[in-house]
Image (cartoon, rainbow, N blue to C red):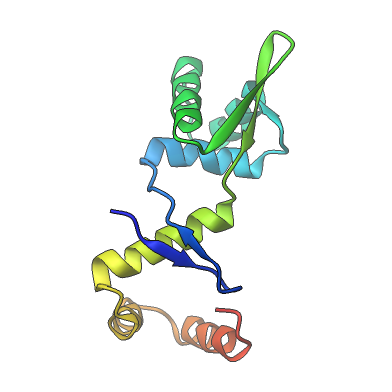
Length: 136
């Protein structure tokens, strides 16, 4: 199901589809790497968290390309990879999807559940401060 995502500037965008965990891990590595990133750069970044076979990484990169998340450019005998979707846009879209899917868009129900989830007083105060500064 697609949802509309409204940005801070008031623009409305189509929601970005949710990635499976393995593809998301590769995207997170790409967002952390200096781009354009080579496969070896991504491999190094991923190995720090969770080792992944070269063939598996190449398969996941192909899937991400087919889904429109990354661009693959040939460079000599190899390829480089560039994200087409920013980490912020992905997070915003998935947050909106979460709110709509789990809470039917009811922000009060979400806030209540968040408060009951075990947030510390400092974390709740940090949220208040973000709201006060209009950064949420």
